[in-house]
Image (cartoon, rainbow, N blue to C red; front, side, top):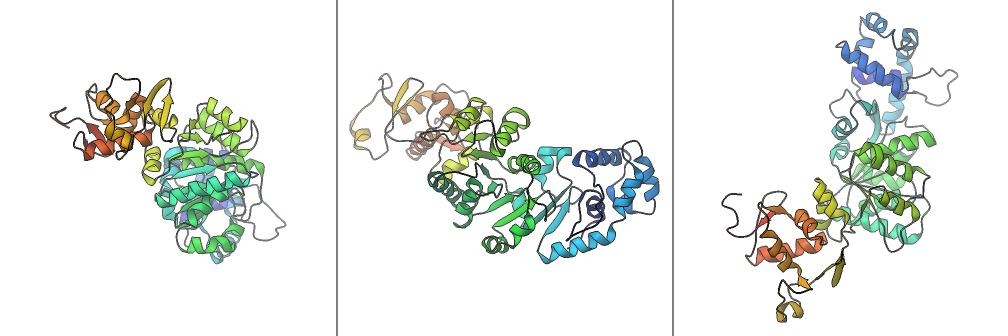
Length: 422
């Protein structure tokens, strides 16, 4: 493992570098302190590596207003400890990247900016870190029904070529990752502790070697569990993802609750969905009241991709109201009938638009005639307050029958001859 000069300096300043027992432990920089130092260096046109160069004392003198130069010098003098740590990590296939490196996760830099961790330790394919995907989080102690449900979410993600992002804890986290990995999919495990142990576990090794799994942590690979670090890493799980699903949560306690509330009320890094199911817990109901979206339970890769691609407010609003089902639905008091293309009812019954119960395709054609521009499936579903998966199915039927045109990415729909230009 070859470390850049910048990464070496950052590790010397921020990493414990504790291999085995040590009689002396220097006070490393806290994330807040390193953030201040990094800002000072940027303002001076300097890099962390300048602290190791010939003019190091000149640079150290400039840190006097915010940090003790003697403390920094003592940390920077741990070169032998760093070499021992690097050798130890390398023997366990653990790599290190810093914010100064080109392969540092772009998503984390973009989402968290100056609050992005100074370093990441990891094992597995770094390329997965920029793949996006679905974050799945939940409680450690859940029943078998929720475990099975979560494994199915992971399996669908695998079938959809969507990466699962989770915290690697027992319960919901591992169920989601297991469902994806055992079905040929990919997963990112954002760990709060024990990266070194996880990298050596038999159940992870094959997936790590097959580039299906990457384990990553902003904390020392040998660090043990601590509530504070577990809470702090939650934002990273969300920052890696295109959307997040909370499968279970206690009410007003626990890491899952705290992480979801932080996203909904403060960070807003990605859409947050909750799995309400038939009997949602008080915690999930409370998150829904805090503006979390209702998970639409997609059943096919196309449906899952539609949820993940929902970016605009209208699309997210549409996704939040999805309730995938069949037969007759009632949404906000307006009724419509779900009729498949080969349904005897749809072939024999002529339903007009002024009837109380209308077929989905007819509703769509009628609504599109009012639009002054081509619209996405999510826009149409939002306007009609229809389930998105049913809307997509009907749109495909109308396109196949020549009653609608479809162009662009994301796909937009319009009536033949409706617009002179698209």
